[in-house]
Image (cartoon, rainbow, N blue to C red):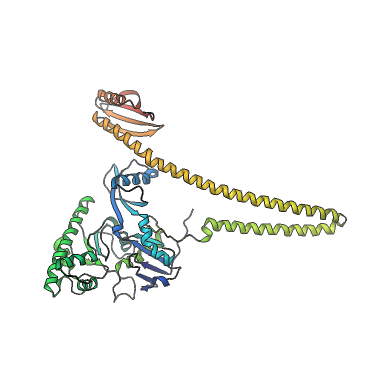
Length: 508
């Protein structure tokens, strides 16, 4: 089925989920928006803070089929991250580049769905819908898609917010790594007050960072700020060392540093001293009327990401629980209403034909008028009864259809739960045991398959004795049904080959 063309919205509303501050972007102009007065046909977008996203990188065997990949990743994520099975998580992933011939690498993102709903509920109360919601580190992708940055280097982004701070790395315009930092603007203010030994109002502290920065006239302030930001950049350097080692990054080419409140003066020197990198300003302008006043760059990124979403309609990283429903004509209820309307028109047309035919008969068969009138009355009664029966029949069909949908949904859900809880872990444990015994006997596993409730292994060894010992070890376990036709010798390779069928006995 051809994909339907995405609707183009005349204006985009970006919303901060914590402060509920919002901006409206329309006709290349951006302005502060009052959320409660937003137009309902606007495109609403927000984001999830980096601190609410659990990120991980996992390897998956290339032998896993695309059909089974999603379930396999979720099972491994629950196991490796120790997720609480009682919590409803939203798990998404994107494949990363790797040189591993045996395994595929995936960046996995785990979000507590109930937490997202709770954070976005105040927005939903005023806008009814939130069309696009993604994690703050993923918003940076739009800078490459909208040609603000060239996708030809390894770029690091550091952004300080009042309630969060995050670091993200992109290579050639593609996401590589992100991490929530332990230094939000609020946390930095609190640590500064601890060092100073007195309380500084958060607004005054923000003004100090943006107006005087790390080279202020107050020597006492300057001394503590230098110590604090030295600690911050040592921490950032440790994060970059880990990321470069984990993702095979030779170096970081460019670093962009910004904050929710504007440029923090003096950070470029710290980037040069601690990271050995020249810092670029994290400030991107998209509106003709915003060059003389600073806008929180998260709002800029949300607006750009919304434009990319219009183009791609990619739902992979859209975590909104309050999406706008499709047009009425595309919904099941809308199609049903259309069918009913057509039925009414058809049903109204039939009586009209019947009346015309009746008039014709009255003219042509006047002698049979009385007989016709009596039969017509009787026919009308029967039709009414049949119509009542049909309506009852249609109601029963609808009820049966609804119950069938429920039954199929529950059956599918139970099958999926069984597959996740029983089938996959059981197969994985058995395969692990078979490989362990095979490795013990120094056999080379050529191929492995599972069908008809049995594992079929093709093994190879320089010694037929080792293959025999492998079969004997399996037999000693007394829980598998072992079957092998013969052990043959490959004269060219000077190796022995054997196909071994290992049946699973569920009663043991």
